[in-house]
Length: 114
Image 1 (cartoon, rainbow, N blue to C red):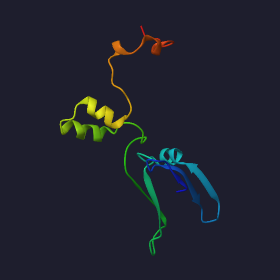
Image 2 (image 1 turned 90 degrees about the vertical axis):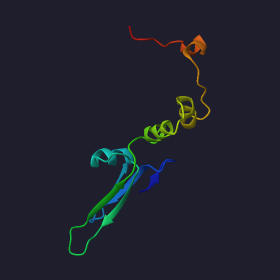
Image 3 (image 1 turned 120 degrees about the horizontal axis):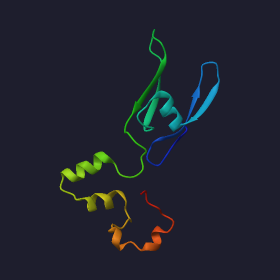
Image 4 (image 1 turned 120 degrees about the vertical axis):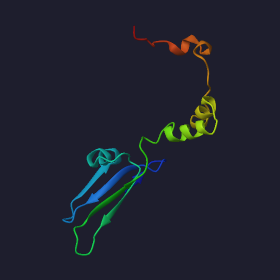
């Protein structure tokens, strides 16, 4: 793994073949190519005695690592936290407001479906 993002997810990885060829890939491309649930993984080369060599990818998580964790939000709700507590926990600095209190100029150029 060459680079990880702030959340620990793989951003860039390098593979070196036995013949010396090198390939570098973005973490998301590896996720899709290997059908991994997330880019939050570790990779370890396996070389068992008398067995076939390979790779072991060990993953954690299901998502993009940005925003609200559904499992964490659910856990907060089970502990009695309301939507306001949950949203401000995951989106610090955000202000909750009703649509009626948001100034109309914030919606210029926004259209709605019929």
